[in-house]
Length: 398
Image 1 (cartoon, rainbow, N blue to C red):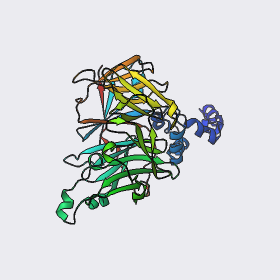
Image 2 (image 1 turned 90 degrees about the horizontal axis):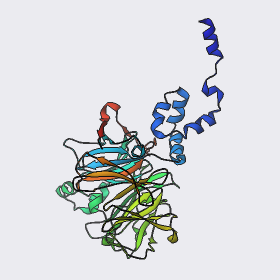
Image 3 (image 1 turned 135 degrees about the vertical axis):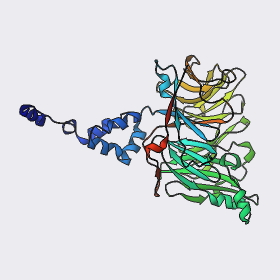
Image 4 (image 1 turned 90 degrees about the vertical axis):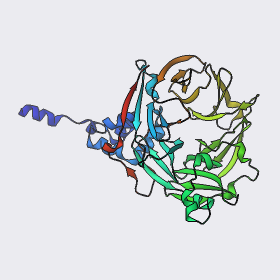
């Protein structure tokens, strides 16, 4: 035993053999879903991984970020699906994980998905506040917009109590993104007050402070032309049209200004939808028996628009896999939902049936990347205990 003890003393640990900078560099390349186990190896590793700067660097350096699709059913029940797991050859089903929505009340409140950005999801919870949420770490915080409700209502207390401002239904424009120049997450909203005047406000989520930017609003913007929900890409929030698309409206978060991107496509795109594919801005439209996906491979470069045709109507592209295949979901027949994987030539590689929930208009979804980032805030956050998270895994058959 003494010899064994002496031999152990002579052995150097992994931490002693490698420089601290090299250990950190190695950990930065570990997939985020494995870091929870890796941090248990030693106190040093746990300290490195728990550093907020490590979480930011891990997200920025990730060559193949993991994608999760968050489903919201009936505005009150949330489920997540690991989209990358669908690529595994031995995976013949979908693992749906039930999530407990933050700041849930009894009876349940109505939630709405407003978007995702760099691992965070923005929710709207009735009657009148927003929630910034990291589904992976389950940390969250609330953002009030009572000043908008006040601008929409009269002075009576009753009028203010019954008035509900829903971003998806009442806002002229809204969006969620990240301003790299300030290292801050931003919410923008355009709305019309009770006197018919248009306003444009911006909220910096680190400080929860609202800024009025009415002067930035274009004077000749036809509001009914644009869908209110925006998509973040390349430092700007983008909006597409309700019907025929000739331009994409965007708001640059650094410059704090509006502009447009031309869509130089030979024919009209009817009822286009925006999506982010491999970090590129894309539009998709439904044709008679197919779905066309137009990808702008170089941002703001008109000649870079490239079209892909998927031989399935009502195919909703969700993300790109590490090797460039298109992962999406569709409805091949009434009462059926499937995840599909196509290559860029439109060839079907795999499909998996998703059995949970009904494919109705009451199901919404948003794709987000998994990250360890802390909620950006100078204010105390809310992080629920593990026993309160109520995460439940449900195996879905083929």
